[in-house]
Length: 289
Image (cartoon, helix red, strand yellow):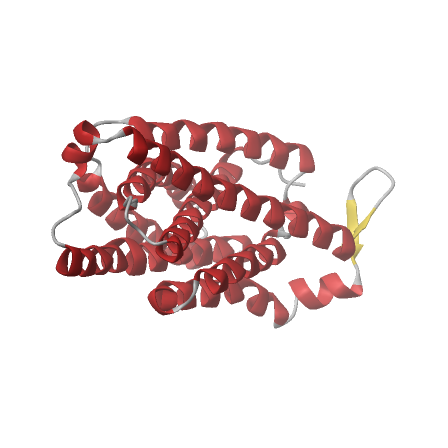
C-alpha cells in the first residue's frame, strides 16, 4: 500500500497545533494569570471589562504588543517560504518547460529515505520544547527557537513545490492571506466573547486528526475532501479565537521579558493557524503537477 506522505505531514502539522493549544492556551495562560493575581492582587479584568474600561495608554500598549506578534509571525512565514523554495530548487531537476523530471542526490536523501521523517518531525520537537519550557526560558531563547522552528518548517514544506504548481501555490497563499487577515481582524475587534468556541474547535481538531489517520489506510477521496473542508472551517475559527485569546493575554504591567515571551508564543500560535489553513486550502484548490 502506498502511503500518502503529504497526508502524513498534514497530520504532523495539525499535531503541532494540537500540542500547542493543549500546553499554552489551556495551561500556561491560566498558570500565568494565577501567579499574577496571587502576587499583585486581582488586577486583570475579564473580557467585557477590558472592552469597556480600556484606557488610551493600554490601547497604545496593546497595539504595540499585537504589532510585535504579527511582525514575528510574518517574519517566520517569510523565512519558511524562502527556505522551502530554496530547498526545492536544490532538490528538484527541472525540465526546459518547468516540469520536474527527477530529484538531485540531496532530494533523494531528503524525500525518499529516513531523513524524510527527521525533517517532518523535527519541528514538532521544537514546538513541544517551547510549549513545556516557555516559563523557564528567556525571551531571547524563545525567539531563537521560533526562528529555528520556522527554518525547519521550511525544510518540511518544501515538498509542496514537488506536488503542486507554483502558480496554484501562490494563488492559494493569497486566498489564505485574505481569509486569515479577515478572521484575525474579526477576532481582534469583536466584542463577542469567543471563549466558548475554543472547546468546540479543539474537539474538531481532534476529529480531523483521527479521520486523517484512518484515511491513510482507507484512501477515501470522500474522507479526504471532508477533512479538507472541515479543516478550513476549524482553522478559520481558530484564527479568530486565538487572536482574541492573544489580545486578552496582554497586560499593561507585564515586564519586558514576559511581554516578549507572550508575543513570541502568540506569533507561533497564529503561524500554526496560518500554515494549517494554507495546507487545507491547498488540498482543495491546489493544482497538482
